[in-house]
Length: 171
Image (cartoon, helix red, strand yellow):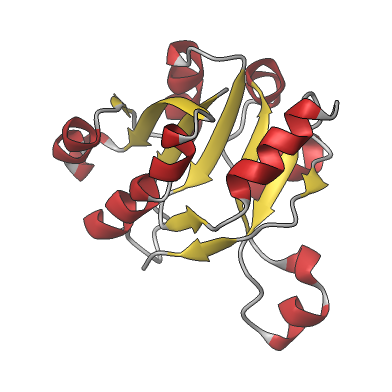
């Protein structure tokens, strides 16, 4: 089982919409129903007003000025040894639960996995590995040791295996 951590610290160029954050959380409902995701933590800036979303979704809220500090606090709150980091504004697609369950069942549970966006340009269609990393499944200790909330950097440092299922944008 996993603790889902939704990272809602927006980039300066593209502020996050609240409905995109809610849709990201909503994409995890199937994972919760099937027993893969046990709990969730929403991480965002203090002035973002995410309290209502976290309350409505029934998840914990961590407010911090930086994404890295927020992730560290969320990792401390996580109840499971494995975490699923998901960038707010992205959603998991069908097959996510099955792929993670297979990874845990057939012995790759300690191997970090990266979820990438569905290819959306000619370049990413030709080389899907160049799509943006929007999610990572890894051990809590592995993520904590890296000390960053940048999913692309985490994917490289943790030497993540590529997931065959993809993520999609919610905005």
